[in-house]
Length: 306
Image (tube, rainbow, N blue to C red):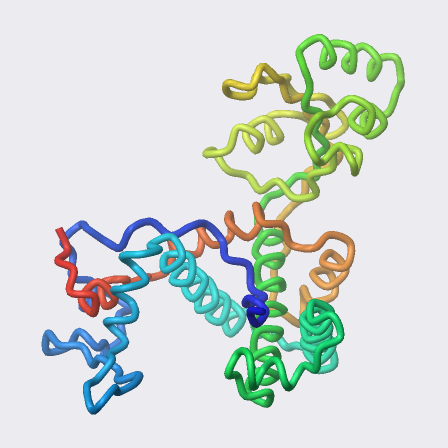
């Protein structure tokens, strides 16, 4: 039985560590206490065996050799957490502590449900070697990070130009039928529920937040289409399916501090939790605007930047 995974969404799988040859330790915004100062890194001692040390670099190198995807996943998770912390501080997000406690308790209850009646503290101490107090403290920390992340992601989304749309994904003949039935007065949500092969069909094709982006075909179509009108269809790559879009609304950016936007953000989250796609879009945008220096771990692993 493994302890529950961190609650914060992981975002995109991180690419291999930097290989562009750049030493970013002196880049604008870099910490003046970077472990790269002086060309050396402190390597944490994590255990000894007969007086012989086991170092953090050995643990990381072994994991990178045996499961690089897992290591990259957790690096990316930590990057996302730090981006959320920075964004929350800039926005001035204030969390309801009762909400933090409730989220942590829910995570603990979900873990207990997997134990099939076994005693939680016994499992933690005897099977996992985990101190129960530390376990619950980490659940609280994870809950806080998740709640902060949800709020800064949604505040970022609402701070962009965004559209609320519905989509229908089907074979070309079904899309043509949907267009005719829509013109005759059938609601698009009903058509998506009946005809769409996309998972959104279960909710009438709803995609609640499409941020303006020239990199996304869906976004480009949504912002070329008037509210209340159909857009497309366009062919989905190599699938033999087409996507038809209906724009419910186009929305101006929400601006202000947390005290200005919190009510709107909280109501929005209650209606629509943050999706994986929304999180990824936020993290990509934040990484583009924030110094993210992965050179230290490459140095710790003894990997030369090419």
